[in-house]
Length: 67
Image (cartoon, rainbow, N blue to C red):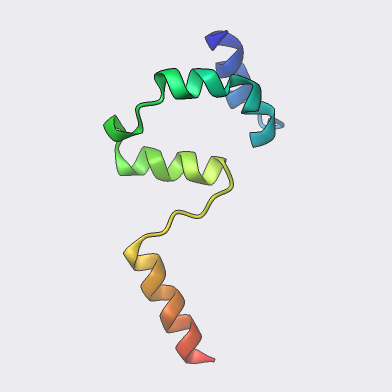
């Protein structure tokens, strides 16, 4: 099961919704508190989420003030 998940993650045509069938593996083995922030940002980008950071928030406020 883990081998097929690894193959799907490496495949460029895999959508995040294709990984929903493996959610039990993520909940069993995914201890995100042990991962570095860089890895978590990569996971968030893969899952099509924009991580909220202080720098990102400041940049958004500056962008709004320029309008």
